[in-house]
Amino acid sequence: MAIEKPKNQAKSVEPDKPKKTPNSLKLLLIGGAGLLILLVIGGGVAFLFLSSSSSEDPSFMGRVKGMVSGGKKTGDTASVAVHKMEPFLVNLADPGQLRYLKVTLHVETHQKGEEFEKRLPQSRDSVLTVLSSKNSRDLMTSEGKNALREEIKEKINHLLTETKVKNIYFTEFVIQ
Image (cartoon, helix red, strand yellow):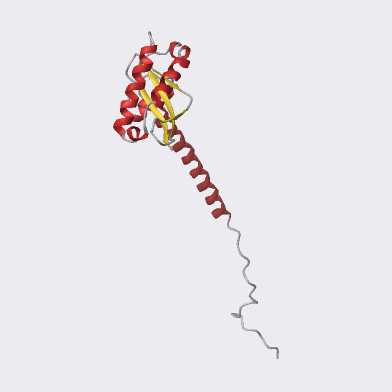
């Protein structure tokens, strides 16, 4: 008699090979492409939002954009120009001490013109004379700096006939 194998006995079990999941790879690619599209659209919207500026923008950034884009004031038809002067290095008038002042300043004028550039040597001479007559104690305070600003403004305005100085800006001010 032959031995029969039971019919419900399982055949030899082979370990399952990992199935490739093409669906999850497709989902990953679609998700990545969707994210890229959203980033491009968001960047475009941000660019349009940030680059559109009203000419009547009274905010600080609006004024800065106006100065950078050619010196026109926002909301004003009068043009202004800001002229950078080369740095000044002078001995201060401190008695008994050797002190130096290094100043870089910008001069804002009411109109664009060549007069300021033509009179630049005379303007530098006037500023040098004013700076070297000061002592460090007077220049340490904000009141002293404001008085110096006004004195420089007056001296340069005496030299100019058509163009007038509106403001003086110190961009570097070091006493040593």
